[in-house]
Image 1 (cartoon, rainbow, N blue to C red):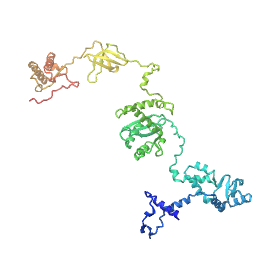
Image 2: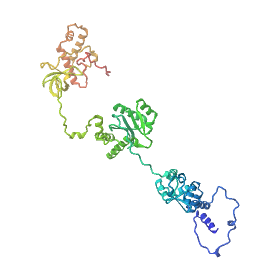
Image 3: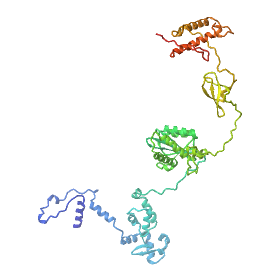
Image 4: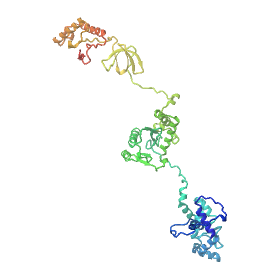
Length: 516
């Protein structure tokens, strides 16, 4: 009793921090009565003392002994016939010995032995399994350990079932071995199946990556956002460039699972395939290229302003480089030729020159007189100064300018054609009061007024020229125009509206200004 009481004290005091100090008996005082008197209230039924809990656990975890095992074996009815046969030396039915040869069984101290392993009755098997699994090893180690000590029918199955139902083992169990890489079925033509994925934010920028499964041709677009509307717009442009694919593979992003995107794919007859959530290797074609181009952008240390240019350079080199899966470059798989880059400038071109077959073309000699087509006015005249290639010429016009024209825009004329056409200029019905004559020569003003009056009162005949009908000679007209030039020269800021008629025949009239 004293040992049990001391155990109670030790368990109770374990929850306190205290210091033990020796005190002689003659220094002890009388014990307090309240600490000796028992309490009247009883312990509730649902409360368990700590000491009782510890004692019960010690009893339950005591090892299984031979005597206890012998008593349980004697009470086991399933091996009663086998024990009698072993004790009497009689052969028993195979069903009574679990289908095992009888010579493998022996009896030692009331326990049935199969070789070096002891038979465990059904009522003790749970306890033995708990002892084997006390350290929570896996199935293989438990089977190895059990085969050296105990045996019963279907022991391996019971061990596997115990490990599968252990919550501690399952929570800390390693991931199962990955299955061999499963490859997608090879597509039969370019852009039959495409893989799409988003990347970012990388340097505050988003990307969408589309990779063709047949040619490995990548497309990357820089996006400001990754909404469903933007995704549909990019896919529509991609379909317009390379055609509508049969299958599109993506992850479970909200852009791809949205009703609007699903409707867009359904309208275009595209079958949408999505892998399992959090399993990116299903869409490995796009995921791998995302890793590639992000690593290159990091290596180039580009900022947002140069990111588009660097991305184009990365795509150019990638499309030109041989892909390990196909043994050809994406450009060769798609176009059956290599796309040209700056590296091709260093390699001599060995392609044989093909003789160009061209039909008979008009040819103009240097110095030939031609009429060049003018799209703003009538054609201009000049001479051929230089021939450019087979169809283009430099033409030196009569006014000193040089034009470049195609052979279809040139017409050969006579070599004695005048430099310019003498087109008479007639000024019609210009009101005298609208022309500012303050700064003009008085004689010029009088002549102009007379011309206007005569032109207004004379009726032209069908065969009369404008100058004859007006009664004005060409010398007078030249004097008028020369006077206009003189007036404009003396006053450069003043616009002369008495110029030659327009191409339509209308006369340029001066604007009405408010002269204060």
